[in-house]
Image (cartoon, rainbow, N blue to C red; front, side):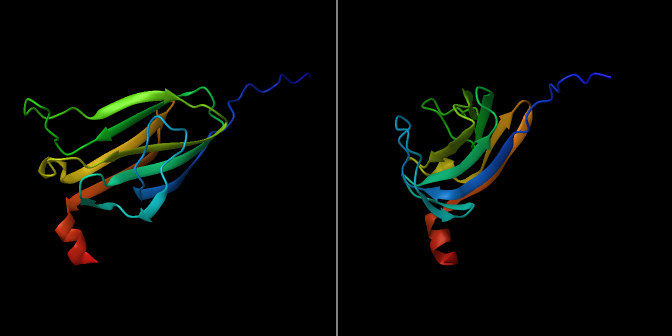
Amino acid sequence: MKREPSLAKKKIQTRMRTFGIHSKWDGESKELPRFIRSTTTIPARVDVEFGFIVNIKGAKNQELVFCIDHPGIKDARGKTREPFDGSVYVKTNDWNFYLGDTIWAPIEDKLGPWQMWLELDGNIIAEKTFDVVSAADVAEAS
């Protein structure tokens, strides 16, 4: 009996490399932000960058869907913004991807849980919730 070659999909491997506070990210650069500290409690200070870096293996050219669901940030007209989402295509078979955001003024509407996740082929491959709190609350807890 002759065996047919397997057409099974190669298993995609994912690993969260870092999560927490990172250096300021330049979206135009190929360089990912530098990891500073692992935490899910983020001090609400202007320009604090937070999120995670995930390593994805075996998914080149597949669509990676991302979402940042923030706690009710208002737009210029005072309406609550929808979650920030979109997609990118995995560039290589061993790829690091950063999903994150930064705090900007006014700070008050940035407080609360920020849920971030990545999805490949209908499956969530990475997710993290960050709690953005008053910077004074973080200082007291340290």
